[in-house]
Image 1 (cartoon, rainbow, N blue to C red):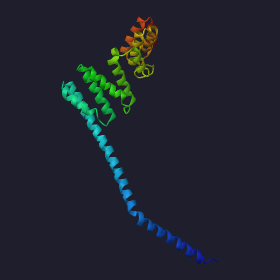
Image 2 (image 1 turned 120 degrees about the horizontal axis):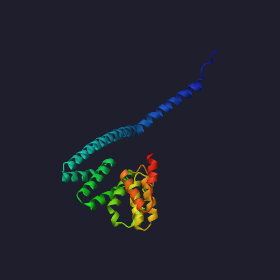
Image 3 (image 1 turned 90 degrees about the horizontal axis):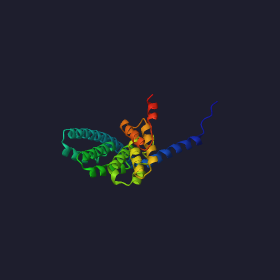
Image 4 (image 1 turned 60 degrees about the vertical axis):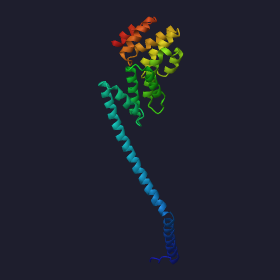
Length: 232
């Protein structure tokens, strides 16, 4: 036969439930407004972040269209307008737009015979740590090419050392300038070997490989046999 519930246990359970209910009521009385404010702020921040990201996407898309328009202006000979627009886009919040605008600005400066502006522009790209490394490497190579005749050979070698290695995207250009700098130092054997490495590297553009083949030969290294073997 079932035993009736213990009156003491029932009483304690009711007291416990009432106590928890009173605690919850007191808690919401004391902190309810803060909780509501916190939820509102969280929702506002989340909504603001979503809006900001969407705004940035839309802004970036608009800047890409502006950049395309600049290239059209350059093609039409409207270089003054193009220069002003590129200067504005060079401060874009988008890394790709900012870098592309600066590269275009440097190219336009070279076209206009303003190597100083071009060099400074490439230098600023190479030095900006927030930009992706491929942009910075490309800018460093172009900066060095413009400054090559004014630099000491050792400075060229040190600057391009990370890029003048087989397997690096800029091995052809960086390696070629490094080899020329070595030749200026009188290190003909090292220069010839580096030119030979460039000539044999099938990932290097053919124009640079052809030039490297001729220069390697001028330093006494014939790579024609190796090139014929690659062609088979």
